[in-house]
Length: 83
Image 1 (cartoon, rainbow, N blue to C red):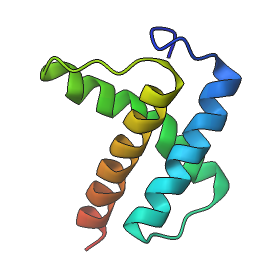
Image 2 (image 1 turned 135 degrees about the vertical axis):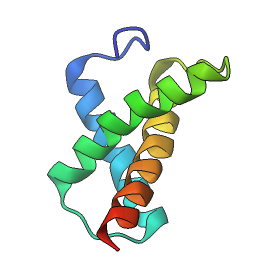
Image 3 (image 1 turned 30 degrees about the vertical axis):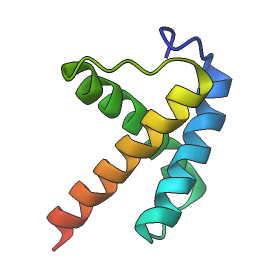
């Protein structure tokens, strides 16, 4: 998060938005706290995966995009284990 230039409060807000967008896109039903967690953890996961391909996303928009991608990945993985 510090590399992206995003503080902790902004990370919570952006993570919540990213998690909510992923929830809407993936048509899942989760609460606000889970959206925030998915967005923040999803951003970490997506930044790690994108880093393997040499892609670096920075700033607020990059963190939002990475959070959305990562949250979608985490929701898909969660669905695989539930079934």
